[in-house]
Length: 369
Ligand SMILES: C[S@@+](CC[C@H](N)C(=O)[O-])C[C@H]1O[C@@H](n2cnc3c(N)ncnc32)[C@H](O)[C@@H]1O
Image (cartoon, rainbow, N blue to C red; front, top):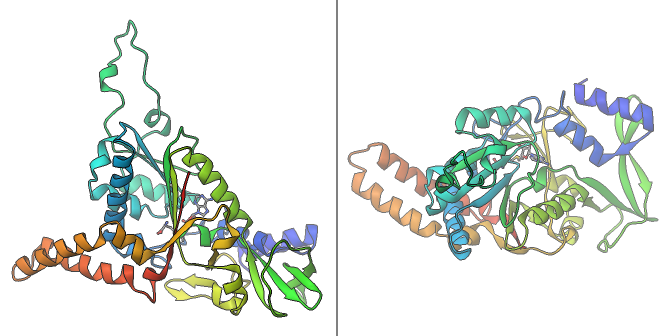
């Protein structure tokens, strides 16, 4: 039995069947046995590949978008960007490597719940103390503080476990965070809706259906399921508060609608991953596999502006970056140096990022606050 399963069984022994969403919370984030506490991660050497882990191109396009938003805000001397669920820090690294025009103003906060992954941030990025990074201007006083050097020149990069409190406006980014927040399941039965709880039957973890008065849920056949997205809805609320007036929240994820999910078998939209392969059933091997759920956009309020990832990347300059890489590759292919190889890999990264059967079909959810 895994440590995460032992923890789930202890909770059930104490309280009776627990919510499916509590099981996901323990399986992913238990500090001892959770998937992300025991080394689970995105990346080629990890368990699944995300857009920032495909290569630096995704971050280069996000850097171009940051420049656009910075320019629209009249190029402020401090420009705060918070990346939630930062994982290994790959997106931060490629944004910084792209050297956006806003770099000197940039205060970049990686927010990552997993201690192991935060340790990785310190290895790969020059991190600063959060308190120093966001200090307000010193008063000109008898100690002759050099207020001319304020604000300090960025980029200033910090890593934290929770969303910070910052004066807005802030840009909040999240790639594949929402699908990884604990979610519940609700099933349509012949008597109405029932929530899925997890108990113990014949000494095995087993689902238990408990009738509930459900809010607005789509028409669905008996046996259909929809996810409940309380944690994601809460995160959107907190992220919008953090973004503040004039800020924005931008979340990239695989997404659908409650009706769309109800019409499909739930085993298609609740997926598990382990070492780049699909894992087992969600209640198997708790803590040894990632558990994710397609995001029902209509479970999030207020409604975001939605585009596909392919549309969003193209709107934010992907084609120019790829054209540049193609001509560099043509010039230097015969030389075959590092610049030529990077250019060639940028072209193939672009194909993966806009692939309509893969990452290109992801949705970009944007809230301007
Ligand atoms: C699927 S991974 C994506 C990582 C990265 N954004 C990427 O695209 O490669 C989701 C990450 O979100 C982190 N996470 C989950 N809940 C979080 C929370 N409430 N705050 C910060 N990070 C969280 C997980 O630990 C995990 O590293």
